[in-house]
Image (tube, rainbow, N blue to C red; front, side, top):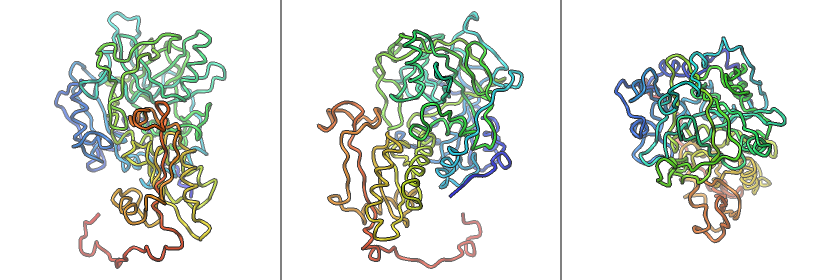
Length: 499
């Protein structure tokens, strides 16, 4: 199934401002406030109620609107946007695609990449204003309203920074989002989950005793935010995820040469931080707070502060006139969509190559933050398909190594409706015959249950028992599990405004 369209012809979104402009034309998709908000815990505290969703502490609201705060305490002439990709519906609107088909759209876009291009600095809005680290009074903490999600955070965090760096040997580039904590006037700590490409680049540079140039673009086209979250094996080392964003838009992402480092950044970003990852320099993430905590992460828990993290020495900050800071709540629905839709694309691609037409759809569920849980809709057409659904589950773990649980359901189950999925588990699942355990496998280190103290099967932090819950009906018994069928009617004849 191909979902490719000429998005450039039908969708005007190409940066954060055009994305916000689109939301303004859609009912109930964007709210703004002129009330001054404190970036220290208050801003995230507000949005937790408005629309964080995901694995965030309850009460929260799923599929709430995106929000713009126009008055930030301590900062003039800058606003903050949050929640843009916090609903699957909005992501579909940004990408011109039905929400349930987004995984297919991204799968297709991986195979039709459009490489980024470099433009002249005169055409780059992100460099309208330049602050050099050598300027008197330069201080990241005064320039940027990086918020804390909670009062316990290790410090202000850049949560939506698109980090761009290049392999010192090959020049191949990668873009991804990492946990960045503001540590001083010109330093950021950077936590890199093991296996990330930029960490491979950093290690190469460090082995040679050299810094690694890195740009951090903040406030970009949502297509870039989504595309940047693809991971191996779908996008192996050397694959620039910006080319996926180019495919989604039908036109190349525009880059520009940075002012102070030998690297590029996203030309239409709102704000860019230019810096270098220093070789053989480490600092404690919570050195300014000593709480032992970092920030809330996607599983819904606050991550522990790391004892020794690489350091980015900032050389400059550039930005647009009247810039918009972009942030997110760590365990919110934004993470679900940014991480989860690429996960779906990766699973769809690998399983379809192995058994075409059998896997109808995938949902990287909100309960797993878009990473830990996948619901897979599998079609058994003949007796020989029995067992292939479990093979599809095994392939899903190969397509996305950080996946922990797979729930398999039949084609009559709505994978995007958790009640329907739970119904399938209650009526089409027997634990002793429908559960497949795969212990001792690497998963994601932010899952707090993945520690030796939790289970004797876990030898070290970051290992897990991956599990398949097969909630599909045995093919030989399908006739006994047909849902009650209701008459098809035209509801609008009775309720004209029914949606």
